[in-house]
Length: 306
Image (cartoon, rainbow, N blue to C red; front, side, top):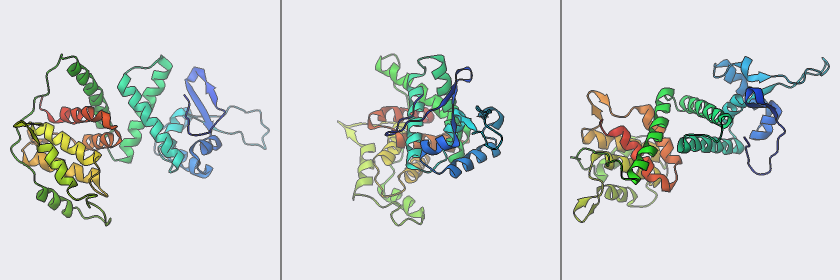
């Protein structure tokens, strides 16, 4: 597995019997373009908080050095990935994007070229999920449920394309959320930022609402509550209608729309958990424009009652 970001070349230790690679703290410092003490700090916290087991995650390869010289300690791929999710540097950001591409590669293909690569991908999924769960205070199991739902969504879309599965059935919407109601919700969300909730262009929010409620030849383009809600959340996040707070505002308006249409609480339980909603919101934000249908169907899978 190779991490590429510009002209970067590292000599790494590989132990085939353990299916992993090893880097010293100095090498990680080069990889993530940050100070060595920062790498040491993050590694210390990773072990202290029980994120990884130190005994199985570090190794000393060259014990032939004299006692006056302290042999370098190597950390395995698990530690490297974990550190990559903690460091605050441009290369750390690049690493996270690379790791995200690995996650997407796994979810899109559902298989690997060989068993070794599959093992590495699975480990990346496991650690990335744990990192995201910790960073955003999510439930790790619910985050993995979202990933599983994403894979199921891709399978459903394939069935749609081949005509072997009917469209997800939803419920009729009964309440039309207005611009004034949305604006009132936004204005109640007090934040220090002077640009929070400020529309980038006049009429941007109104345009999104119009798109969700549009008719074509007398027929609703998105006839059900679930379709309208899913597209509303997508547009509010991806169209960037506000100078700041698009994701937070998008989720708030999405929940209010469901609530007004009596679809937020079903049988005494919120139809979509907070953790799942945060994870989906992050996935929508990172998705490509051509993945819109997948993202919308993913949200719908959580909203349509089985």
